[in-house]
Image 1 (cartoon, rainbow, N blue to C red):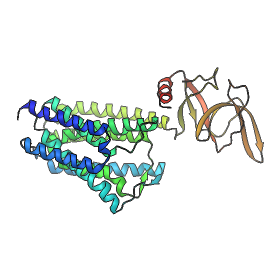
Image 2: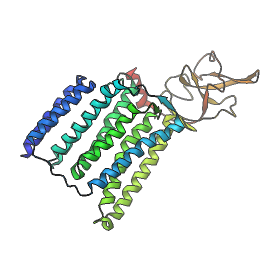
Image 3: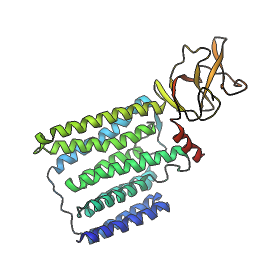
Length: 369
């Protein structure tokens, strides 16, 4: 099979999937399953068999299956801290036929298609295969996120698009060297569990993005090091550098996520109005501590009102029937706030600010609004 012919097939498949995605056809799982099955059959009859080395295939299957189980266990372990919610999709006959069966068909068809197309070893072909796999993976999640609001858009970009690209790079690497079976098992476990279990961990979106993007890198580093025994001595220093750099990046990302999530001792917030102008300008980023004690007059605090975080200064404090009430006012406002703040609505006390750091995110949010 000539290289140009394989690449032409991949380009045609990419364009077809892109059209189906943009027209929202792929949000109907049965249509996607039928499309992927049809493409797999056509490619199987067009492309000669992709002979994949079976060396260590069974070990890879066991290792990747273990990683898949750890992946799900990790989410449910985090759920013990962040809490659980009842799954919106309960396991039933309808769920099996509407979601589980078509998604299973999509996963199997996609990985068989990937393995067939990997007969061509060029970088251009592999990039197209990653694009094809990413678009098919997007079809599995299509319709779950509202792209018209900022939160849904960011979740789609990070949790679906970027994470799918990272995963498909790993899938292509494993499929080329060890076959499609281990990736099929991995995807079935990590994608179908929300349709099976009655409760789902309420893991913060940025944590989910971080885990989905980091996890394939961890698996790659482990597999690449574990099976590269012949060159282990020569590559030992390089592996150490990779592990060290991955660890450093992971720690930094975890710190950032902890700050942005605002669920820990220290949180960050972008100032979105001019009510504190003079002290805090619109677009400044403030760091605050989840402090509900030692609040005194003059402190700038963060509090909730109608599920919106507000940053104002405490101008007076009163004890009414053993309830501490904080009366607040924006520095640029002419009058004080109409209602008071209690410990229940108090979020924390501002520690310091970074000027103008939040302007880009504020601009994006305002564009969506």
